[in-house]
Image (cartoon, rainbow, N blue to C red; front, side):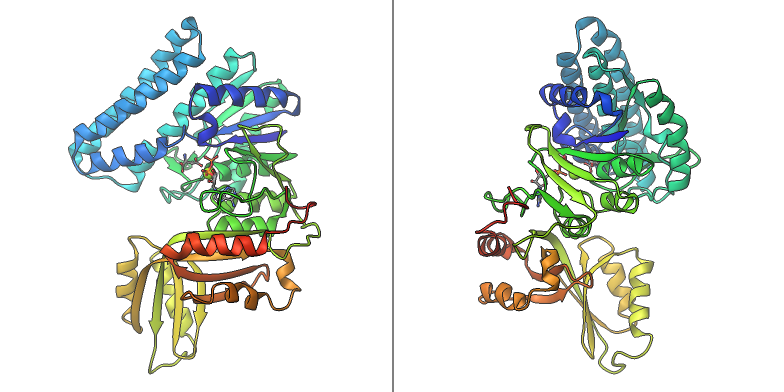
Length: 456
Ligand code: ADP
Ligand code: ASP
Ligand code: MG
């Protein structure tokens, strides 16, 4: 079997879903399992309405829900013939009525918990998977809707639940394998799962890629991530329009890029696949004949030093200075324990004799974390920073690279520099507003000539 995951833009409207159906038709012989995201922007809107309801603003929440209702009705109407649509309309209506009831409940209580947030957020994928399965059937594909909450088992860390692989694989084998054996095409929503007790969870923003990998980790021959660009590109095309397609990239390189901001692929996607040596392809649903990017266990030889540059904004630097203790035995441990207690992940670390600097994604936990750390040492934090990360296997062997990179940026203030432990990334921190300039300058320096075997 293969897993085909379609992101939000690949199911954003009737036209997109129609294209998706044709793409799946072309793979019908390969036993595809289809994983879909919510229609583009729907998750954002759902989270917004949940928050409005949580703040007691019932009318705003219901207003946003009405907008979504209309969009889903219209899309389904365009995709389905009148007869089918009349029946299906009733199903959608039931879903939206339930959502509205939930919103009224949240607004009445005036409190939004992570658990309730997941209930609201899950509607995006529940609805899109229903519409896609129905549209596939109407186009002659033997699609069967599968509720991901019956397959993907997670812990109860709502909004970023962690899948429990053993149980998930058992359930997938029970639910999905018989469908494939019967020649059916299972269609399921990404991003969502449920606890053992059946409480709805979500696995983190952008998590549908991860869902694809979870479903594929069992025994897929390939995982295809269908999106709105030609594959993984040398940098974010929004920052640098002349970014090039990368034909082949190693798992390690792709993981570094994903982790440091290339949102085309969710970082966790790569791990279950790499462990099983399953190739992952990133493909363009608007340009399906393009070969996309193949992610493989080992990188092919490449004449360019770097494969790509990524940037991750909204970073905060936390500086922890310990003037008297110096970096005594156990000091780092106590710092990291504080991060652990607040469930804050650290990206880049640099240390000196008297201080430690760490970068974290800016989030609400920082003030509480800083208060906790202040018991150990002097703490300062600085927001509005960005991590820039250059990735390439050749970094390992090529001398003088840092000089070239920082020479190019000699007029800028560079904070925290790290040449990753993986030896394939060079990472540093800059002011957030410098990111577009930094990316463009580095891109034109390192990608003006391209190895045709690796880049298109
Ligand atoms: P989907 O909805 O299909 O999951 P995403 O929006 O999550 O799509 O990811 C695709 C987007 O990622 C692209 O449209 C592009 O703007 C952005 N992106 C950022 N960095 C890169 C990169 N290095 N290569 C390709 N796309 C990138
Ligand atoms: N719909 C979810 C999100 O927007 C998951 C995904 O699209 O990958 O975060
Ligand atoms: Mg995505």
